[in-house]
Length: 141
Image 1 (spheres, rainbow, N blue to C red):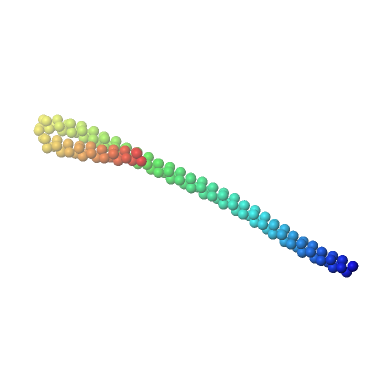
Image 2 (cartoon, rainbow, N blue to C red):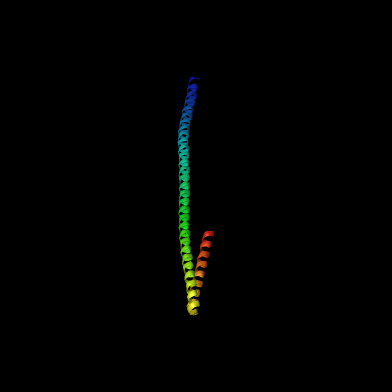
């Protein structure tokens, strides 16, 4: 009976050793998996941070572009308004000149000169109207 107990004891010890080795292996694997999970979580956080940074960067770039476009449109409108103002003053000068010439024509009967000035004024009025139309179209945009 002693020998049998000894063999059983040896078998039990072997099983315990195997189970301990399996347990140690499982614990090591568990530790590796926990490390991998932590690494993946950190990686996910880094990706989220980078994603937010890129989104913010894109928003800033878009806002800067919109601001630049608004400034460009504003400068263009300002230049158009200046052009309209210059044309209006030129038209007023031409009107005065026309009135003076008309008076001269009445005195001297130079109708052909009057006709040329009227044609020039008509062209300028048309140009003014075209520029005003362009300006109004640009303002609507």
